[in-house]
Length: 115
View 1 (cartoon, one colour):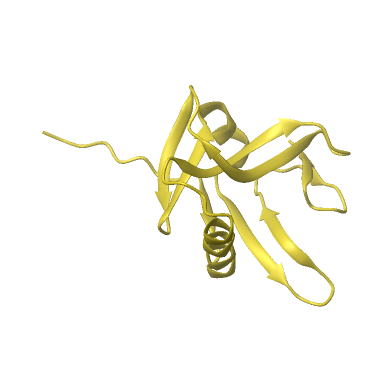
View 2: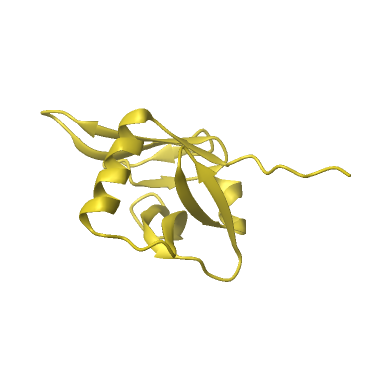
């Protein structure tokens, strides 16, 4: 009997994982919530990244990445496969950044992209 193992479509840097656990604890996020990673239409380049705590919805895949429960709609994997999410905490920039190998172009803010 074989077991299929799904490979997580995204990864997180150590800094992103630390910040996500910190946010989850500060906001007292419940056990039935996970981190939603996805895309939505909009932004100056055509698509925006979605990153936030949410409950599982129909059509979601569930992954455990670095101890985080992650939800992603199955269709979003096409746009996000291989993406790395980082957290910057410097003088010039603070926040989550997205290194997406599937993005043909990104806007200056880094939260919008096109494929």
